[in-house]
Image 1: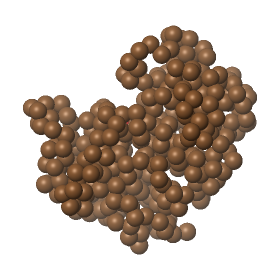
Image 2: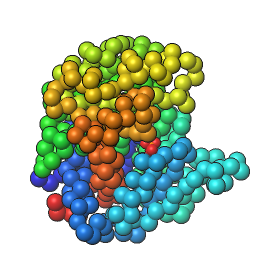
Image 3: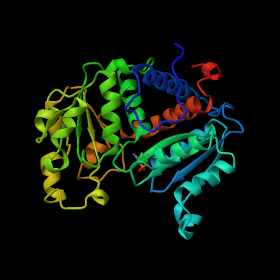
Length: 330
Ligand code: CP
């Protein structure tokens, strides 16, 4: 099947992504997944294009997989590190972005600890009349679109690795457990899982899960077991200690006792249940160490692997301006 739907210059949020767009990303990622399994894992599709990775906040998975994705597409890559940049001399974020624009950036991948920074840069780039595409690689507690798309791809691949399409999730129960309040990953996932037809249940202590999350169409639980009951997939989230301005849980030990995911607790799920975590993981807090390392139950490594194909798909779709004719044959 040929992907058909793409008109976006920027990917800042999944809030308005349609099912057709999600499907286009999944199908395109599937093609690149095949490329990544070949002996020569590189295609010339973004040759002479410039991808700038502007990460104002630390990252291991996202920054490196965007860099690898761009290189696999034969793009030139510039990486920006705040500590060794002119930002430390007082240059503004917008002037930093304009500097990369002046060097000819076609795509900018932006992570920032404050919500809204990628959106602000995109607005400024549009105002300047350029064609540069901005990709939100995680902004504050707002969104992390590429993470949710790689999560979706990982889930769809479990259900059908030949044809991973979002509607495979229709009616599947996905339990999301952890620091919902501070999670940009969950907000993007709520959009993509919702459009795909998944039945989403959230679980966390009330201090980390306001009832307002029901507005996303999810069921809210302040206890773990009802969320896990009959779940097809369990997505755990990191306790974001750096974002907690006050003591929202009594202790990490008590959190693990009440909400930590262990083999025993998965007994109430479907027999085929799989566990995900976007990383980085606090072992023994969100998930037991043995479960995290169990290849029969944990999809955490698959998520990282899927991330490269999904980010290749996003860079390709944004960099090709919607011209899907140049996609490698699957
Ligand atoms: N999942 C995620 O965003 O990880 P990094 O912070 O390592 O990029």
